[in-house]
Structures are given as C-alpha cells and as structure tokens.
Amino acid sequence: MCEASNCIFCKIINGEIPSAKVYEDDNIFAFLDLGQVTKGHTLIIPKVHRKDIFHLEPEIAEKLFSKVPVIAKAIQKAFHPVGMNLLNNNSELAGQSVFHYHLHLIPRYGKDDTFS
Ligand code: 5GP
Ligand code: ZN
Image (cartoon, rainbow, N blue to C red; front, top):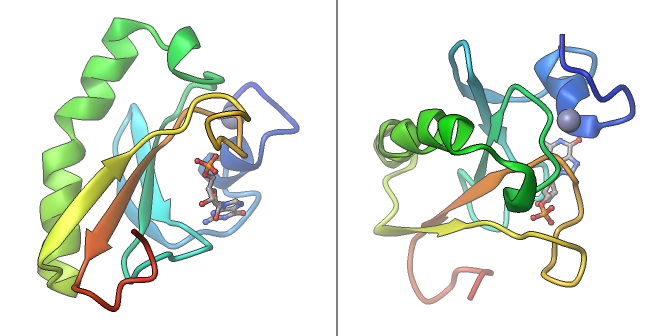
C-alpha cells in the first residue's frame, strides 16, 4: 500500500482509481496520462510517495530511471512515434500539478503534435 491517502497517484498504484497500465514492477508503475498531449503520453512513478525531485532518494531514482528505456521502447513499439520527450516538473511554479514525483514520456509524431 502507498502511504499518502489523498494522493491520486497513490490511489492509482493501489487500484482505487483505474488507469491504463503500461508497466509495473516491485518499485515503479507506469500508466497512460489522462491528458494524452500526444498518443501514448505515459507517466512513470515510484511506488513510494515522494513529493518531487527534492524529496527523491538516489536509490529510488536509480530504480526508476533504469526502467525508462524499457518503457520508452514499449511505447515506441506500440505507437510508432518518430521521437520522444522526457519531462519532469517540480513545484507548482515549474508546472507540477500532481505532487507525487513522476516522469512524463511524450511520444512525438511530427509537426501536428499538440505539444511543443
Ligand atoms: P504534472 O502537471 O504534475 O507534471 O503532471 C500531472 C499529470 O497527471 C497531468 O499530465 C495530468 O493529465 C495527469 N493526471 C492527473 N490526474 C490523473 C488521473 O487521475 N489519471 C491519469 N492517468 N493521469 C492523471
Ligand atoms: Zn502518492
């Protein structure tokens, strides 16, 4: 069980809120972003609740980042993007809206992408 009871992403990990799962192991969870700025837009989160990068231990970051290429390749295989952005917002000022640390993987298809 994840510890922050009022956190949307903890509820997703615990299955209290449904999500389209992309990847899961003992330490991390990846699922499609509800907003889908491009097709296949995916969020990668640690299963432990950490607010942002300033609260993330290197050991947790290591487990998370080591799976990024695996997840990126799975998205590439499923959606066939030309490229991909890896993005992480920390603090409201920097655009963070959910305060459970997460990486965005945003597939890129071409000039008609709604994300720039
Ligand atoms: P941030 O703005 O914090 O970097 O990104 C938070 C992301 O979480 C947003 O892109 C938003 O669309 C996504 N999001 C918010 N609530 C939910 C939800 O309940 N389910 C899913 N799959 N994504 C969510
Ligand atoms: Zn959480």
